[in-house]
Image 1 (cartoon, helix red, strand yellow):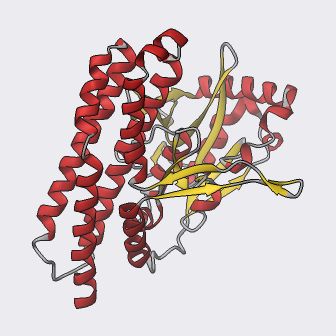
Image 2: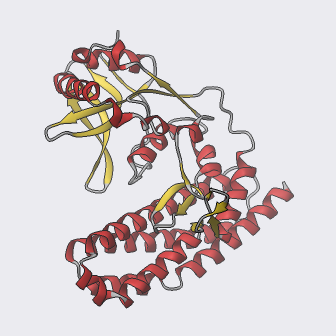
Image 3: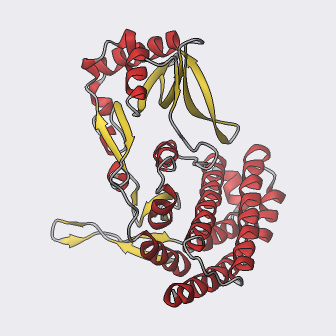
Length: 354
């Protein structure tokens, strides 16, 4: 058995604020077809409470959405001695499996950790963790992993009802591997459709049906419509500033602003990577497409700046910062729509010429 091993993982590119998305995406990008899959699958939407998610219309991405490229298998928690979890992780990593486990810390704080490497000499296991707004590779000793997992194991047995729905995202013990039968076929065509849907943006009305009648309609926004709705939200917050201050709605406002703009920024990073992947599929490239991609890079920087300002606003509660955000976001929707329209037009011509 080897003294050390590190499975491939794309930590720096998987800058996801959502732990669920980060875990899946970081492993997906270790696949030789990860860029193709990403270009053809990732969508974003805003729900009826104005929260933005990675997903389709009103469904956040779950394990099933990654099933083409990743394999998820549940491990029975009773099959592993919790005091020897570190040994179990090493065995799985040696079989090229990433292991996602829950650890429990003081104060009943538990969190998922994706382990992808180990070093027996230093007795360390490696995982990725969100630190200062970015995911980084960090380590934890064998002894600490055993201790914190044992604490979770005992807590899980005492409170089984708390984890009844966890399977939609992950199992309590999840073995993840990259599928070797995924070829990425038809990804280009699917990616082109995704770009078209992103550019158009949509609003969907969904009404639940119960007791012989449809209930109140809830609206969901997709693609570029999410950016437009955040422009509207910023306007509404500034318009209602006095009421928000009096009502004490700061906490909800600040969290919404931070997370939504961060996800919009991350989504643009994905779109940019997808642009570059699609262009690289051609041997004969229309050179005029590169300036279009550069224009989109500028949009990425703008939305990233807005996301940083939203974090500043959350820390300072300085409404002048929100006014700066309004200045930056005004007209950004129209600019991005124009860029994406020109990109898809040039990509279409290249495709048919090929």
